[in-house]
Image (cartoon, rainbow, N blue to C red; front, side, top):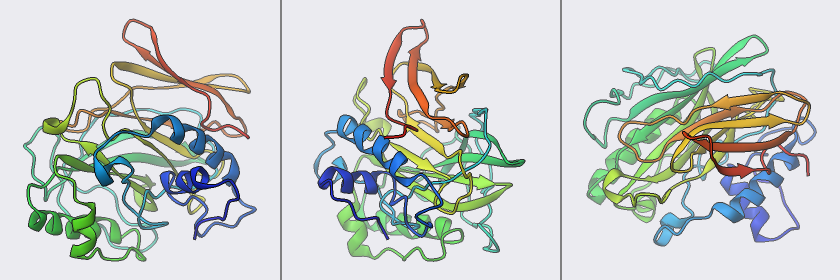
Length: 304
């Protein structure tokens, strides 16, 4: 499903990091190379030293598994970030797929590896339709047996929106299991229906977190795999420690601001920025509470 590149392993890794963005999309319909170029450069800087397989593990497949992401178009000019937790599974499946039946826990309750904490982390409009970005946090499991059960529940939660998603085997789950790491499923809904684009990241649990170190940090671009958001795909990224707000400045003028959102008791916070239609980003800057610049990215939403 992925597009072939001549640039070597970094480009191949970028494809996996952004979720095989080209999978199933008409090559002439979306700015694939533009998104991959930014993701490739960002990937080089943000690879993390997580032990063993966790270092690069982002679970999913093009439309179903190693970091699912997409390419798309739309008309979003603002992003309203929300930190509200959903008490129920609010996202219905894409098209005619049934609504997921996996229960959801409010972010204030304890850690249960079989019941995700679901939080809306951003929302906006695209061509008159409402999109929402969601995060479902599945707490770490203590045994491989529990990991098997969790993997089956995660599959059920995603399969309604991604019919082609293969059911995980116990052997696959064993290879991907990393004690102390939570699974974070990022996805979009459009007018209340969950879309096929999603991604799964491994993030440190509170017990496995080192203060000041963004273990499990990463980013994904959603809203393009099925063309859901047209020219305004959504960047969902972990925030640098201490970030109070993130501002995207656009080449054609104006800016979009977002605030990092906490998901349950996870130490990794996330923010959402939607691309301004018809414009590249000049930069995306993270600011501390005192106004100091903590980080500046110049590679997302840029034409190579």
